[in-house]
Amino acid sequence: MSLSNRISTEITTEQAAAIAAAFEQLKTALAPVLTISLTAEERVSTLKMGDKTIAFVNKTLEYVAQNPALVPVYIDLNEAKKDNKLASDIYAIYQQLSTLLRAMEDTGMVAGSEAYEAALVIYHSIKGASRSNIPGTQAMHDDLKQRFPSRGKKIDISQ
Image 1 (cartoon, helix red, strand yellow):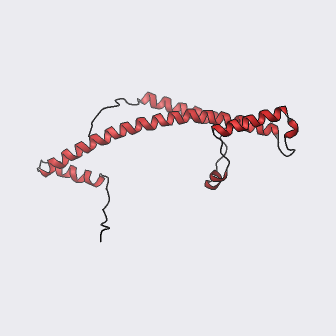
Image 2: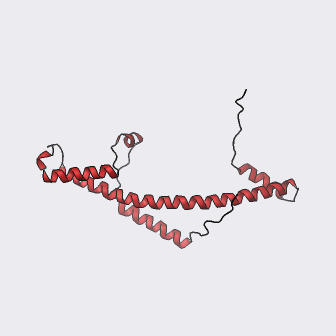
Image 3: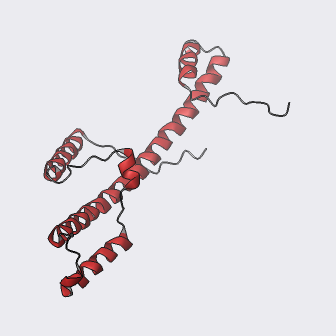
């Protein structure tokens, strides 16, 4: 066990309130746009856009701006341009949020790892104290043992 302390900070009550308010502002600002809720099947079957497809769509729309006769009559070019702009704008916001989410995941993972590692060391100390019949530690050990993540029973497949 390393017991390194890579992070030592906390979110204050004021920061938590500011974060909650910022999320409410973001949800309010995006509410008129985020009106779609796809089913699992729709998520699988819907065409997806990424960096390459965004470039493909942009280039295609550039070509038809110069050659409008190439647009089939059943395609609403203005709607396609509007959809493309929305997709690009949403993608830019998504990238920013993804970066933020990754930083949150990393920070939460390190903080959780450090807390869990400390708890494991303390648990083993309580377990040892319980084995040595230190008063009050048996109840603590019994309680913590119930909460300790089970590794599951190993199955002997050699038979």
